[in-house]
Image 1 (cartoon, rainbow over the protein chains, first blue to last red):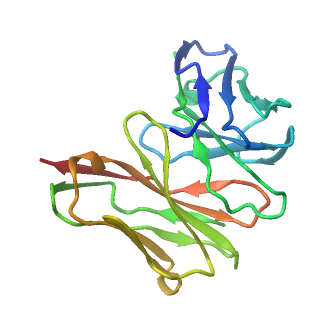
Image 2 (cartoon, each protein chain N blue to C red):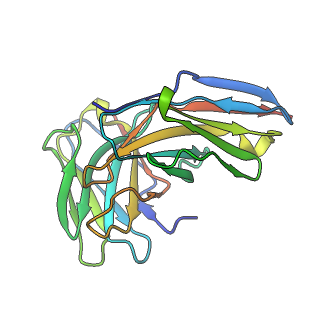
Image 3 (cartoon, each protein chain N blue to C red):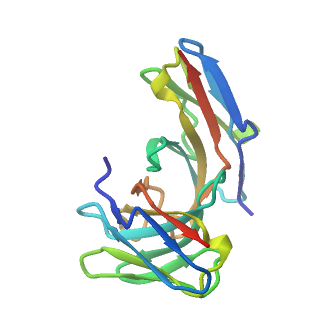
Length: 116
Length: 115
């Protein structure tokens, strides 16, 4: 196990609703990234938080937002849910020095979101 | 633009057979990193290996081995004497020197090892 925990593990929402997913980083890690994995696809980068600030974003609309807290845990918020938002949402943590970004990511087991 | 291609969608082998999973990547970065991850049914991505663009030395770890060739932009993964526990989806990923942990993943190869 990686020490990265996510909650909830499964949830069902209806179109138009809002959802918050939570992630607890591995101890000692200061960076959190979120990925969306649609069924049968590879994970896609949503955004990354480093020292409580967003410092990288993929091709996702503004209704995808997040937070990183002083204890380096994180939240992913999605507003105005659409059917295509149904996916496995993966949180990953790592330690970044700010100079080198090539380290491995440690992933949680994900939150599976179904939008009806 | 960066891209990772895993052309093999699904592979089935019989236990104890060797199997190679292919990965081809595209990037304009001179410094980049390549990874392999394993995703069992539980969903968690399990780190297997990391390679930087300046290290083309092949690596062996137990039954696993990796062949990195910059000339063909490939980073292939071989499992020797496969076991049922190797059944999973395997992802190849690429990360550039972007100041983020933005990984570009391939679409994955589902490996089924039959007893």
